[in-house]
Image (tube, rainbow, N blue to C red):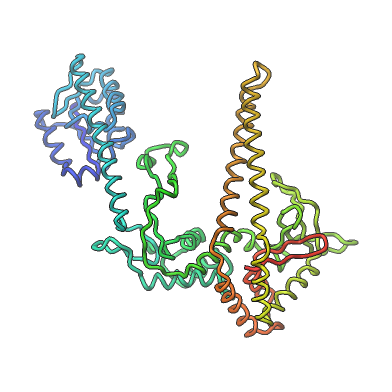
Length: 501
């Protein structure tokens, strides 16, 4: 049976006007008969071999169903020379006659050379098209144009001006999300709480879905477009087009380009920059600040840290003469804990009363808040010490890797190569983890820290506190108010330091 193979990709269809019907008709004329079996890949890139119709054609060839194959041009089979040669060799070994409408292919040195040259030219043309398109997109971005509709919640894409325009309805939701996360309220708690709240109020997502997820909320809160900074050319997606044809472990990941290659496109701001930066600080600590509730609630859960060893202090019940007593401790009993802790323990009731007394004093006396903020400016940020510690750990890890490589190079037969590879892999992973921690702390330290905005946030907490009255505040309201004012509490042997925002 005679087979006809035709393919067109969306890009080529738009640029060159290729038509599948035209390809099939010309192939039928070449065959001289309408009694053919058609294999058609519609809208599939020729860069990859794993295509539905081509795969079916190859299977039918192996089963002996096909005796002759007609194709418009070699680049319909593949845009890559190596793939073209793989396919034609596969057909040749089974005695299949391969015919092209545009040019002949013969099993002679001259024919093979001609075929290879055409394949190389097709591959070169594809690369040049991609390069020209990429360069054109970058130049367009540098002119301040938004390349396409990126589906950014809060904005509409105007095709005529090629710019973002504020969508007032969605922008109101963006403002609500930031307010719910950064201001005291009784409606929600953390990212998951905001997602559940928006879902319960039947607010649709950008794509019209009825259910919000915490990751969607997080992405919105981390998007700098809301303060007027939209970046293009940030992500390198080269090679990702074929991911749908690859196995999971072979898929090409999206990579972030160096920051100096990003192209800034100004857009209308929806959120004040100081509120945005305050939200980033809260987000960096949200995992432990909004931890799941335990059976016994702890007022300061997620805020305490040992001042000596740096471990976070979590709540637990300890035995005291047969009685369960709530306490906070820096001891980590979980497998894989980076540091087991120095064993610091403090009674929950004692430290909770101490911290709440200080916070309540600030809330009752707004002038004390201003004084606390001013004093905070004179303190060395706790991030500074952590950065210094992590930098030392990174240096140690690098030195350990160098020593291991030298040891392996000097050894003749005493060390197993597989063991060395495993140790190097673990050291590399540790270094990557430390670098990520360092980046997070550096961003936290360098982020804009507006005293004026912090004062406004605390004054909102004051107003909420005074409107309720201390005696009427519930446990949850007390906890939320503390989190509104306090970013971390350092516990030492004889003292407690409270760090405000």
